[in-house]
Length: 335
Image (cartoon, rainbow, N blue to C red):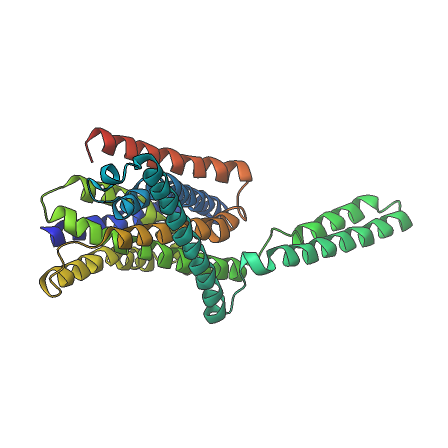
């Protein structure tokens, strides 16, 4: 039963690829804008889940279980308040420690991706590259302005040439090859981050579903749909093949049955009845750090390339809202 529900929850990731046919219907400009909206939405989902759900609930609760003393210790010592305060401090320290460790892992992943793909990250060259292009724009405009002063009668044609020069060297405009390379980086980093996120979820789903609880697998399945969208859309835009988008979401979703397999191995081979709470807290906290870093370094910068900040932020806030609604519904269901 644990394997079955974990497999179903993981396969829900493939449903995120249903956004691909929507993009196929429109021309290139509209498709780019929809891609930016999807990336902003995915960033909103990942950021909100990380701060509100994982750090605010799951990781905190697991660390509290680890640092809570056995019943009766506080009463014997007569310092319940001081001991509880000390426990809260250690909980916060460990949550923050593994959260920033996850950020460091994500930044290392970004560098590794750059090395093997031969690309350039937003964090290392974004401002420098843009400043060089802005300088080219200004030089082109200055040259066009000088020509216009020399020939007053040809002012209109010089102005048109000036406008064309500005459009060709606009700092936010990129070639198709550059955009595809950037989307490949985004899709790869998001794929790895979300796959790592699914591994501890698969482990938890296996233990919970094996005891007959269905609410946790349902919650994880609902969370996997927008995460699948975050993987499928950039993969499709970079490759132009819907099949690759579906394959990427399928592989990412299979990380949860892989986590369940680890759980099975620990139970039946290593004779471990339950994974220590500290391990769960560390995995969830570091995963939250990875997802926040990927959202801020990869998803949002790429989303701003093809759409206005207002549109991207609205999509990001829609991701916030969807995750909050799902959390509230699960609370009402007793999950």
